[in-house]
Image (cartoon, rainbow, N blue to C red; front, side, top):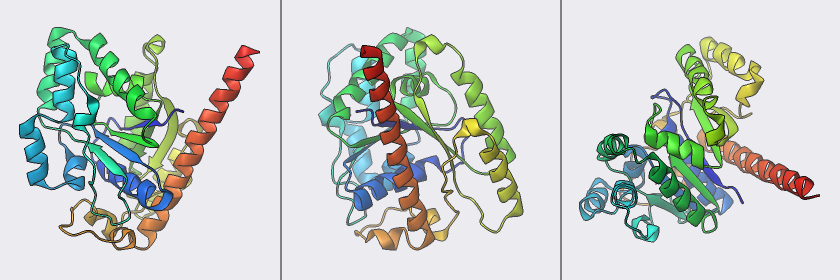
Length: 289
């Protein structure tokens, strides 16, 4: 079953990593899903939201991050066991015990330079493809936190994952960023691309007329496939990025309308994935007939 989802936008500052964190913890705590978060962003933001700075630093020093996996497989052509790089027991939410993390490192930026220099793009895509094929059957959902922009590494994820979701904030720049991304997606269609699950409107100011107007513009474009539920800007979500030293209940971390919105988003995400898989199965059966 297709279950790998890249979360990306060409524009930064749209709350992408926070959404990956919140969706992973919601899918685990409220939908009993085994979730793997792959941190493909050199800033390692979601890694630091799921584990302490000290623990992440130790993993980076020990060479067990996404960077080390990619360097070994792509640049050194050495077979690696992906299990070594996945960390269990992350998250500070009591009920989210089935969230796993493949952490990142700032050295991912240096790796990107080497891949371009060595022209190892074919091996990069093969490595990403092999990793995703391996984890599909083990985890219910795989969320990939991609960095803003369109680097060679981000392109590899987008061309090898099953689906992608585009978080946006309701403003003019975010709308334009979607147009840029659409142009990029249209290039080299023969190379394949993830299926669009939809645009997820994030950090919406519920009392803002400007936000409401930009939201209407986003929803008026049918190609965006906007999620029905927008995620509001709330105090709870702004502080969800701060890892608590002690575990806390889901309702404490995602109180009130934050938790309500996230549960609705995750339900719709699961429904859209199921629908896409069903359509793909039907299409395959039709082709066989």
